Image (cartoon, rainbow, N blue to C red; front, side, top):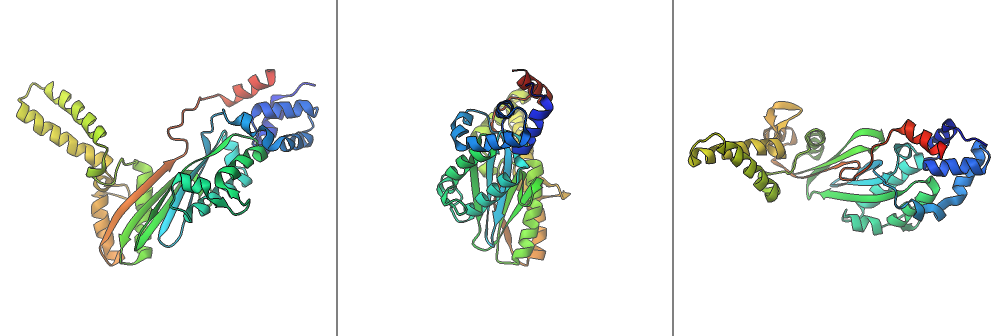
Length: 307
């Protein structure tokens, strides 16, 4: 029997399975939607290894926190459909909670036991590939901790509680009011989401990045024909501007552009009730750094059905 694009799309939305899997399931079950769902479920983990070569650049970022620490994790899938799957969301949320009990490194979280399955996080994700029907991977994690103070979390483009397309952590060390510190840290986290700074301080910017920028500025300045002494001052001025653009503490605060983040922190100390210091930040954007092929979904469905 002929399988329509609409049937493939419907089954994909119901199960999160790959398009070829959906087409095969419908063909095997003569277009019976419920039977096709069962067919996909029965295939389970037996098909997981066949999916391992497909690009998983969608999925979710998850965050979790306690009094003095917070974590951010990224779990990838092939399609955005899976990000709306309750089982997938619960798994990502659970992995973030597991990560809180580790040092936060990707290796430690992958090896940690996932309570609901009694298996490692890595094996739990692999098992879920068969259940949900797409290639998935636990990609990375990070953790920030303070001796005293607070670590705030922020999710941008939230898909559900503590889950979304971008996650940010910001840590503030202080002996003052932790709630006030967390409130300001959350504002800074929103700022980080918007501006994507390269480093917390100028000293922490990658020296290779600085050298490259300096070379570019030098070449541009020499085109002016001015003496080397003047050129050197021009380059220094442009480097200062560069740091203002990429260093968190030197950036204009998006909540109040009249202040730098550093100055806004100084003002926030009045609410916090003690000296405060931003000690770190982490920003995870879903799929960043993963090469993926852009596809026209409608064309993809039509092409699949014709095969």
